Length: 131
Image (cartoon, rainbow, N blue to C red; front, side, top):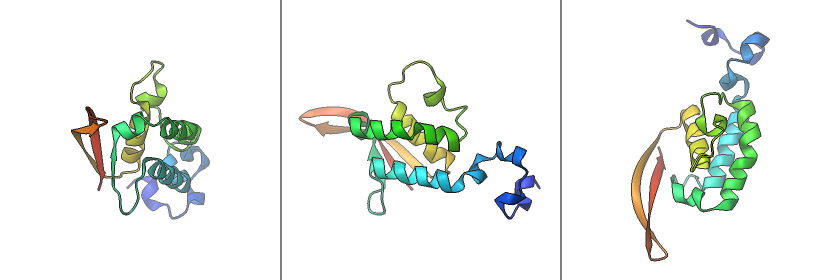
């Protein structure tokens, strides 16, 4: 059994250990960030689907996700997140941030590549279903 299994309250954790376990220390803040992400991408009780092109083509959504980056870096362990630690410019940085947050918060989702017709043109996109 590890140290986390025996802890009933965040105050029981030694301060030095808190650095390593952001999932416990920032539980409320992480949930708030997830809720903000859901609001940005349009996920709610009635709609559990979003498409990558909806984020890629909407500058407003990109800007809102960009504004969350300082909060994300504070409340999530992002050292392995390529989208936030790579000096090169990424094509789908904002979609990657959403995916990393879903994965880190243990949200089950499935993805499926698909083509959609928009303005008489077909575009390649990915459909994400939150389970």
